[in-house]
Structure formats: C-alpha cells, structure tokens
Image 1: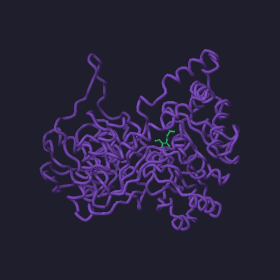
Image 2: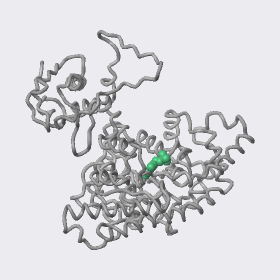
Image 3: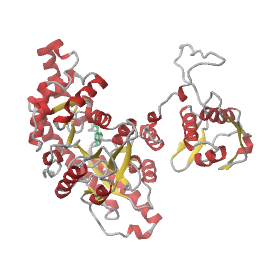
Image 4: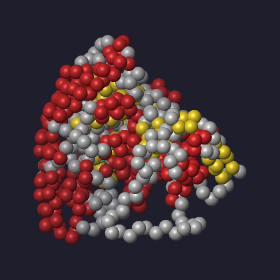
Length: 525
Ligand code: PMP
C-alpha cells in the first residue's frame, strides 16, 4: 500500500513544491525512515530551501495516515543529522547549511556497503530509549551552547565549593594504607566502614538506623532505578507529584512504569487526590519532603503524618528522596523524615549535593523485607559501586571533614540565595510569587498562564541568564507552572545580577502580557 502526501500548506513552504511523499507500508524500511529519506532528499536537492518550515507533526501525521510519533521520530532523526533545527513553540525549520559529516584529518572514511543489508539502527531502539522529551533535548542543546551566561539552572556546586584537596588527602591515605585492597570489586551492600558512617549521619538526621540496614548505591539516581525495577513491572503505575524531579520521570519511564500525577497544595501532596488514588494499583508514591525539586516546597509536619497514615491504609509504599539533607540554609530543622514516622518508608539519600557529585555515592534505607531483593538487583545492574571512592568517602566522614565542609558551604549558599533574592526584589519587586530555598539550593518563581515557562527560558537566555523551565518537570496534567532557580553554581555577585536581569525581564513580560498580572500584591511563598 502506498500513501501519497501532497499540497500541505505550512509556513513559507508548500508541499506541492516538493511533490508527493510516497510511503510504502509493509516495506522493510520503517515508515519514519522513509519519511526521513523523503524530506532529507528534498533538502539535498534544494526543493526545500534553507529556513523553510516543516509542517507541524500532528498535521503531517494526519495527512499521511500515520502515527504522530512516527513523524516526531523522523523530525528528530533529521535534526540529529543536521538537516533541520527545531525550536520549542515555533516549529521545525530547514537548516541554513547542509549537514557536514565531520571526519578527523587523515582518518579513513567509514565504508558503507552499497546494496541491501546492514543494521537499521533506528528501527532497533526500544520504546523506553526515548525517555528524553523533545523539550528536554532542546533545553540541553541551548544550555550547552557557549557564551557567558549567569547560570541559575545548574544544580551542582561551583568548583570553589568542592573539597578537592581534602578529598585528595583521604584518597591518598586509603591508597597508601590499604593499597590494592581498595582496587577490587566492592561488597554488594557497600563498604562496611561507609555504611557505619552513613548510619551515624542518618541517626543525627532523625532516621535511626544501623549499618546493616544501609545499602550503598551509585548516586541516589541509581537508588531510584533499582527501586522502580524492584517494585514495578512494565506497564504498572507509580504516583509522582504532578511537577517533579525530571530525573525521576526519566528513570521511572525507562523502567516501563506509567506515571500518575498527584496534585499539590501548600502543605504538600494533596490528600484528597491521594485518597482518590488509593485503589489505583500504584506500587509507590515518590516524593521529596524537604526540598521539592523544582518547587522548593517543604512538606508540613501534619501532611507528613497524613501521608504515612494514607500509605498504611492504601498499602502504597512511600519513597522519600532526601537529596538535600544537611543543607539547612536558615538553620531551621526540617520536620521529621517520613522514615522516622513509619518503618515501611524507603528512604533515599546522596552525597552529591552536600559534598561531591562525582563520587556517585548514595544510599537506601528501607524495611528488612526489601534488603535481599534490592541488594541482588543492584548487584546484577552494576557489580558494585566504586570500592576506591567508598573507602575515600568513609575516610572523609570518619575524619569529620563533612561537618567542616558543611560549616563552609551552608553559610555560603545562604549568602548566594540572599544575593539572588535581593537581585529579584530590586527589579521584580512583588509582582510574582517567589519561594526561596530553605533546605537546599532550589528557589521557585510561580508563573501565570500568560507566561509559559519555556518562553521565559528562551527570553532569559537572550539576556544571558539560564533558568530551569518547569516544562521539564511535568509528569502529566495538573502540573505547576514556574521556573526553578538554583543558587549553587555562581558566586553571589553574579547571582544578584542574574536575579536583577530576570526580574526586569519578567516584569516586562508581565506588563506586555497583561497589566492586571503586574499589579498582583506580594505573596512570598
Ligand atoms: N533526586 C533529586 C531530587 C535530584 O535533584 C537529583 C540530582 N539532581 C538526584 C536525586 C540524583 O542525584 P545523585 O544521583 O547525584 O545522587
């Protein structure tokens, strides 16, 4: 069967300029590949001129009688190959220069056999390998482009706040004292010395535990990966906040989980929404009680108690991601961890935010019922987290360096957050609700419907400021709309400047969108 596609009007380009596209269903070449070939051919022979706009994916899919994902995939492949460029909200356009195929000088060209055969890679990818949304790819591409930007999006410490020298001392010491014993595979649950230190740390944070209950992981990201695979078969459901950590969305989807978004109110996840979902069959609810990423919200003590009571009633497990523990910028203790309220809660933590992301070391503390399965599954996935780095971290913690490090970075983060806040206040005033970070480095500006976050992101970029648009954090409907601002990657003076530029921009956008919005009274949330 052959489908013909003709005469579609789109932007400056009319489809009859490039003639019909014939798609052969039942061919060995996947449909998206055929579409790719057809459009790439038109670009190469000049039928589609530089700057011409491709039709919207939905419209093209309808015309071709194919699925929209097929068209999206073809456009993506065209973009990867350098034929087109897409801009969120504007569309997909033919690139101004034909794609170059870079080759190292003197390197032989890769030979491609002519004739049938070869690996059709694009047709081999699994569905879950498409975890990254178009918007996220676009965001990453723009954030990587060069130029001096004030970075309010990056969620890791600036180089001056990383304890390289102290850590080097610890590594030197363990290598000198233990030598090759640090260079093999690690015990499955982690190095006992490190598990002891983590248990002590957690007890200080109100999660009373012992070394035997601690499972070391390669970052908390891996903890989430192992947990979702341990608890969820592909196609089963999990509950997440409607606006949530993008990395959790990615890793849960990669495991084949289906996400059900949960609405939020000022105290945290909405209890009435959860009651309605009690019989959803979801395996767990993933949350970040102390510093919700990206909104910075802290779940109230009352809501924490209600959450554990709900979990007991519904039988749906809670996964508590406490990724910013110890970063109490205002030196106010957060409410008790969920894990302190209920022994069935699975608690996840990390040394990435308070210490060194490159360690890739995190941990899980959960009920005894999960230990064996978790350990076996984690081991089958990576054969253990780095032994050397675990010894290095254990040495660091035993020497009390973490406490000293926190004494340095917490006041510095406070200074940086306050500088960002001062910059925003100077220009934005009270025109939009701002929630400043208190237990971590994530602040949040809520945006009205008239100001889509991706638009604010692009406009801020034009002014040399990088922000995190909440489009990246949508797990489904009901999501909150805003931008995330971090205060960890830049010194105070640049944060102030970034806040000022952003505030000026937001005010201009508000004024041009609607005079009413600009007049809203101050609401510091
Ligand atoms: N949870 C949250 C909420 C995060 O923001 C991040 C990283 N930004 C992680 C987990 C994963 O961090 P890591 O794997 O470095 O511990």
